[in-house]
Amino acid sequence: MPYDYSPHFRTGLPAAAGRWSGFPRYNFIGGHNDADAVPVDDFVEASQRVLAREGRNLSTYGLSSGPQGYRPLREFLSASLKIRTGMTQDPDDILIVSGSLQALDLVNAVLLEPGDTVIVEEATYQGTLQRFDRLGVNYVAAPLDEDGIRMDTLAHILNELQHKEIAPKYIYTIPTVQNPTGSIMPESRRLELLQLARSFNIPIFEDDCYAELTFDGARPKAIRALDDGGQVIYCGSFSKTIAPALRVGYLAGEWDLISRALAVKYDAGSGALEQMMLAEFCITHFDDHVARMQTVLSEKCDTIMDALNAEFGTAAEFAVPKGGIFIWVTLPDEVDTSSLAQVAIAEGVALNPGAEWSADPESGRHKLRLCFGSPTKEEIQEGVALLADICHRETGIPIRSGNVKRG
Ligand SMILES: Cc1ncc(COP(=O)(O)O)c(C=O)c1O
Image (cartoon, rainbow, N blue to C red; front, top):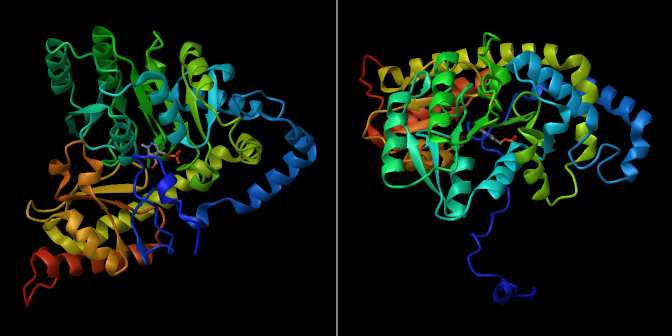
């Protein structure tokens, strides 16, 4: 008999994790990326070079760079953020973290207590919402349009909260290639957002992990770059631009905030080999790699939009993503995508139901998020066709007649 741990588990544990049984055949979930786009040969070369030169530093925690992460990587980020986002960020005010998920955890650990309130975009990253749920933090949904958070409604929300004497702890936004909608907030709106945040004295938490992956290569300045008051906390990641399994992200902010985040980062440093390899790789290859990713992903985005149009016709509505790896699809009201996801996964098609990506789950009930980063173009076409068949069988949508099979 195996040892019985159950009497020893603490109360309030989440349900046990299941064992991994492999990826589904048509994998449209998570933030996975294109396998062929991983620059394996360059990684091998960069790793060999940096290890031969500096491998001895692995003998100390934090290499020889201290607890904030490998210094050459922070220097690369400082230079790259300047060019790409317009931000002036000293390497000493950057904290390397184990994926931007850890950045979310650290910022939350520094700023949030149970019962606090934050502002989120009405459709947003599930990992962020789950964190608030676990922390007992309330979130208020700010409506979106094709340019991101609507400022008129945000002002209204902030005024209402003020009347109730609720001071939100921060405004969480993914302004550049929003997850899941794929929109980009223009600079004029970023300035309006800053203005509002200032007048209500609320920090902004800018999550920019898709920002390098705009399909036309252009992006507005980061909100943090537009702010001279230091009210914006910024995080980014190498997960989407290079590879999620590396688990390397970064937090950029004022030292006042970074020093607090560092004080609650209890892991004695994020993985060193990844940081060393990334720094070595990025200094010479980052720009070329990003340009290649933009092309690869933009082609896949075209493939999935064509497949959705062909297989769902007018039943599937979506805005054209401006970058990234996701498309946010609205189906007719009567389709419950959580039920659809359950049936679809049994047939090998994995999708993210909209309710899980919505601050108000009911509003996302008939929406779904599809990740087109990982499947091949053929898998995208086959998977979307199979999904349309399943959806038709379960809900009658998309409507099909004898003469017109699709549409
Ligand atoms: C908006 C957003 N933030 C953060 C993350 C976490 O990414 P990582 O921890 O891999 O950097 C994701 C992943 O999908 C995301 O979509």
